[in-house]
Image (tube, rainbow, N blue to C red; front, side, top):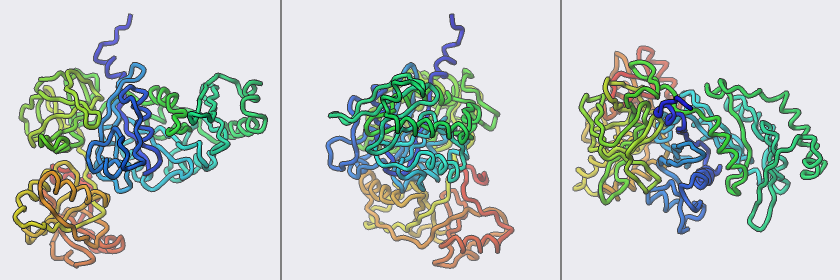
Length: 537
């Protein structure tokens, strides 16, 4: 009889992960196939046709459904094979926001999705760098093998050269495009055949040694000979499987398949649950916090206002890091030291939400928030525990806000204050004339469309934006500092963020390098910890 305590057993079956990809690599399709297997949805939708009556299950904002893209992070929770999965569905548009960066702080592992024809693309590189910064283990799924693809050996070489992470293939494709016959799993010696039929595909799996006559007959002599040759090459070219290296983010197991045709997704999900870690210890100011410690702890990684516009709600998404949660329990809001009663905890499936009675370390909760919580805040039962903050990254695009109706200034301020607290956009002000129209900074251009839409729909403030000619920004720390020294319109500009920290905008990378070289007494910073003045990343 097992003596494993219920708390440890529940935590052990949790898997909290995110999927990262470049646009059009098939992330929405893969997400919905995973949900379909988990019984979370009964019909896998498609967002290809923007006017279709079905939309991605993970999209909740009307603007997302209108455009057929994911803009905000959704939390999708479901059960599969005795595991409880928390899937953090991040924006898939190329103008992604800081929402993606922050969400990766709440994940324990990552699925990196690549298009077999396009390989490693720009957004994948950006997101991979954030995963590496956090030491997240990464499983790679190479998608769309039923279409014309790059040579799989070239794809592995590209991953290693561009991303700097070695790979070890778990399965191996047999052909591609019209010649795609299936995949052979190296770890289990299993052939999964891909057969085109009236329904698009039919997959059958059977355990067959490489030299089995049945395998040669199934593939044909030519394809079989190529498979044997490529697998022999892999034995010498790829690294052997090492779980410790994978958990340290130093080795990525690779799978091949086709999410659209549901080929290889179920075996991939089963293997992923074996590979992906359950919740692990988290770093805090008080030391490492073990997930199995009884006291509940967690941190806020996302705030979303107006998910239900008719109720003007504000939800703080909390990643539980240790202990067991029960509805109605009281915790401490660590930043303020005040008690916080957890009466209305929610779990989500896009627009659908249910009250949560019990949850464990690794789970994601949505807490009704009156405005007290901020991104990066910690909650704790018993002794205060303060987790490492979530960085705010320097923006890459800037606009000045022009309010179309001067009578709506109050609504504009309220909207910008709340959207800034959500992390949807960064708000800056002129250091001399604070009443001047604010400047907004964003990581991706699409964020400005979202802000303009939400200001109009949720706050009744119509605005237009004037693009500013700056591409880079750095916070500045250290004496001596003078705003006027950086006042060179069109080349550099000085602003203050909402916490009063000076930020310098630069028109080009050359201007930034020149200014930094000329001001060696100052420190120029690419990311800061919000809410902690002077705490620099």
